[in-house]
Image 1 (cartoon, rainbow, N blue to C red):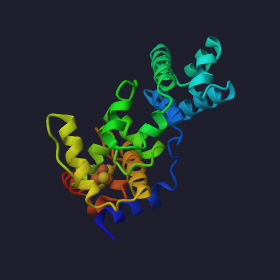
Image 2 (cartoon, rainbow, N blue to C red; image 1 turned 45 degrees about the vertical axis):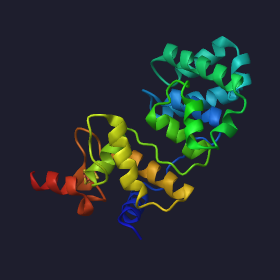
Image 3 (cartoon, rainbow, N blue to C red; image 1 turned 120 degrees about the vertical axis):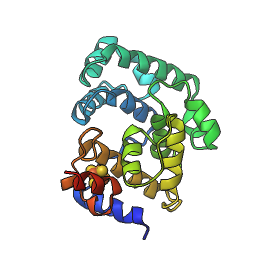
Image 4 (tube, protein in one colour; image 1 turned 180 degrees about the horizontal axis):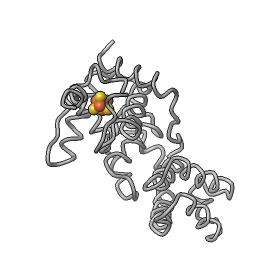
Length: 224
Ligand code: SF4
């Protein structure tokens, strides 16, 4: 068992089972757009409303009455206009490229190229799509996961986030078996830990289940 396995097991015991992002590529795209500046509860309310219209396929969303679409999207919170614009762009791309769901299951370079035009699909979003909706063993690195992993001693910070992301990805992947579920589990728990406990400004190290094995946590609790 690697050190990372031990850390992930401890997080699993601490948080219990965590909800997974949707498996369907279009639904996952919508989920990403609704997640930004929202909370899991509001995002899920908006997603549920879109499902009831129904508007969770590219064609269904294209046909959906504008008013219903707006009302549903606003359940996710502010930035309604931006979300609707992002969804419109995404609907166009998915309808123009019906093969998108199969392209993203192919070679990662072509997959990433195919996702480039999608709004809300930065470094983290594109890789989340590959991991959860295309069964590719890749690790999405967003600011949260990067912070948690580096505090635990995986990878180092560079000025350029792409470089930081690469160093974190390599360090974490080094301890992961080439197995899709292992990658999903690592992403879900490290990223959730970054929202729930290992927050940016004020990590709650004294209650953290990883404290005994975390260099940053040791440093912080020693100085208090
Ligand atoms: S001990 Fe502190 S810094 Fe380390 S993972 Fe836990 S919350 Fe983050």
